[in-house]
Image (cartoon, rainbow, N blue to C red; front, side, top):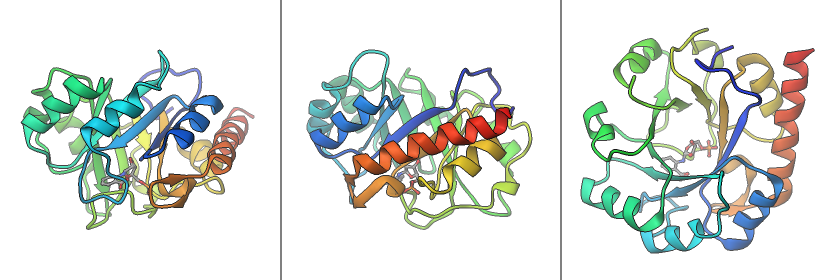
Length: 217
Ligand SMILES: O=C(O)c1ccccc1N[C@@H]1O[C@H](COP(=O)(O)O)[C@@H](O)[C@H]1O
C-alpha cells in the first residue's frame, strides 16, 4: 500500500470552503479534513478572520487545514494563531526549512509533470506528514486537472495524499489503483468556484468507498 503507514480507510479532505452551509453539509457527511484557502488570488480565498469563523464550526477530531502559497511567514503565523489550524498545506515553492518554522504539522504539495522526481521530493520534504500530489498547473492548484497516475512510485516513502482533478466519477479508480492514504478534492465537488455541492461531496465519498471495496476484493 502506497501510504507509509497503515490506515483503516482512505481519509477524505475537501478543500476551499467559503460558506457555512457547504461546510456543515460536508461535516455531516463525515469528511475527515476541511481546507481553507488562504491564498488571496484564488477564487476560493477566505480571509484569516473568515477562516477562523468557519473553523469554529468544525467538531473535534476533524482536521482544519490552512492552504498557503508562498505566503509571508507573519501571515502564516497569524493564521495559525487566529484560525485554530491543525495542519498547514504548503502549495507553492516553499523550502523544507520554511515549512518547519511554524512548529505545526504540515504537508507539502507537489505539482506533478513527467520530469518531476517524486522520490527526491519525498526525500527533500521528509519532515512533512504527507506529500500531496497535484497536477502541474501555472495557477498553483485548484485547477481541476488530473495528472498521469503512472508517474507515482510504488513506495513514495511518505503518506500519499492524491489530488488534482478528482471527482465523484474517477475517485473510485484512483483509490482502487493507487491506494493513497488520503484524497483531496476541490473543483470536482463544486457547482461554482468556492461553492461546494453537498450532493457531489456525498457522491465523492461513495466513490471512495467503492474504490476501497474494489481494492479489497
Ligand atoms: O483551491 C484553490 O483555489 C487552490 C489555489 C492554489 C493552490 C491550491 C489550491 N487548491 C488545491 O489544489 C488541489 C487540486 O484541486 P482540484 O480538486 O483539482 O480543484 C487540492 O489539493 C486543493 O487543495
